[in-house]
Amino acid sequence: MKHTKFFPVCFDLDGVLLDFTSTVREVCKKLNVNIPNEPPKDFYFTNWFSEIDSSAYDKIINTALQETASSKPYEENIDYVRNVISAGYIPVVVTSRSYIGPVNKWLKEYGLGKCLVLSSRHKEGDKASIVNALSLNVLVEDNPQYLDSFIQADPSNFAIIMSRPWNQNYSNDRSARITELKQLNSIFSRLSKVA
Image (tube, rainbow, N blue to C red; front, side):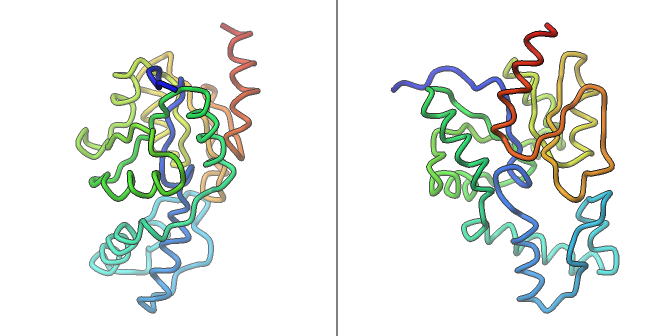
């Protein structure tokens, strides 16, 4: 099957497809660094590591990024994206990671080698400009900081919040909350009735 059309939703990597927090916990254990078991409700990595100096923080994050190959997937979301590929679409994965080689390798290992992976790091962390440049207006994201900038970038943008413990305090009128990607089908149904 030839894949020529983008799926109408962009997916964030960490927190949506890849369980980066588990990787960070494992790295902390290896480095003998104590962190709270769960990230704070207003999660951003620097908040989770507020008791740790910046050089230790950098070492933890860089080590975790190097261990992408051993990172666990969110299986139910991986299955959904596999189905998107099976339906003939090209899924777009947007990440704030600088180096996408390990990301492509990880996705391929889980049967997602047809994904187009784009880094927002080279656009100063601006996922919105990447998503909108592809004429797509929906982003599935777990980080409230990225959700807000995405929603503010274009009046037609709609954010899907991948529900995680660290974003429970986040809400926005131009967003919906899901716990797994298969719930996108019902959201699309509701959006098309509104449009």
